[in-house]
Length: 256
Image 1 (tube, rainbow, N blue to C red):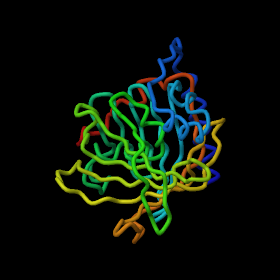
Image 2 (image 1 turned 120 degrees about the horizontal axis):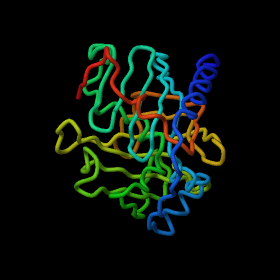
Image 3 (image 1 turned 60 degrees about the vertical axis):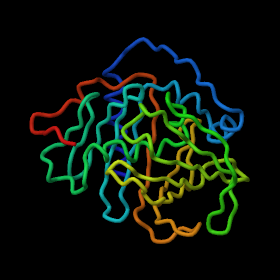
């Protein structure tokens, strides 16, 4: 992991100097005081909101596959550099290199921003078209949590019918569990899954989880571990990455 982190940091620093655009700060969204309090418990959320780009390193712990991510936050263009493949979104289409067979999952499009989204909750719930409201407490593994639900406008994202419930640690006011559904593949009544957020680390004033652990969810309890990923070297940048890094390479193919 140390060698990956060093190489990753060097690449980020190189790419960060490629693009140089005038910085224009966005108007802050209208948020409830309760949700604002949750965001503030995660550090300087406005820094994330105004940032132009983000990068991080990730490891799939079950198979020890390493992956680096580079994202332009406004456009959500993304490039994933995996030890087995490269995946990207150029603003219009998703692509994979060197070929589709190198990714064993069902959908490149579904995967391309999956962990970016999970890693950046609750910050991404400040996006346009997302509304967060406090709902009744939920109990998980015998512990009661203050709970917030994120709802999406019908035109927001690829799966606006997905459900997200943030279970907040009552002592730290930070996200501890996410209960979510996945309707992307056409399931009209998808089951809930649970995702645990732990070991928050300070990335220049903004806190991100170091570990995300996915579980099956049943009868208000987490059951079997489905996956675990760990993160390092999270960076927020004031300038976008050059758009060229998000373009499909010559040996790549467009793929959904």
